[in-house]
Image 1 (spheres, rainbow, N blue to C red):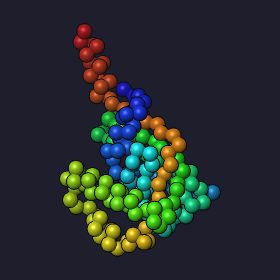
Image 2 (image 1 turned 135 degrees about the vertical axis):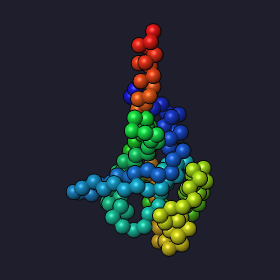
Image 3 (image 1 turned 90 degrees about the vertical axis):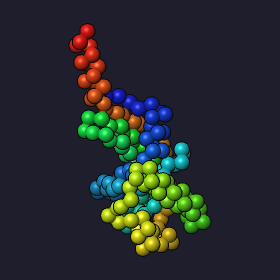
Image 4 (image 1 turned 180 degrees about the vertical axis):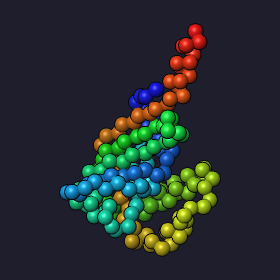
Length: 162
């Protein structure tokens, strides 16, 4: 069974996850990378070092973000967000950075993830907050889809039994 997610389901996905993929585009090619994020109900917040992604976003602030909740190949929920990149200036980024870090640590605790290829402590220690660019995505449009083949199979099986 395929379908559209309602507003509450979309909000739940955005609030319950901490990793998304962000797509941006320069004049030639699209660029897609995973990032950790925090959703406050209005904006999606992230951080990055200076580099290709930030350079592209500064030139073209239009972005697309995908957040997934995948149980299996035939059971998933996916949210697409179209919006605009807004770089947060020093002085305005501290609260966003604190919320992002708290959200990531909460997700790690909920998921019982204790080991990463690189730990957050190492990442944040080697990347001073002064070198990290905090940004937010102003949301223009959100859509969501789901697939659940188990429901379709169970519905078909029940109908065939009758």
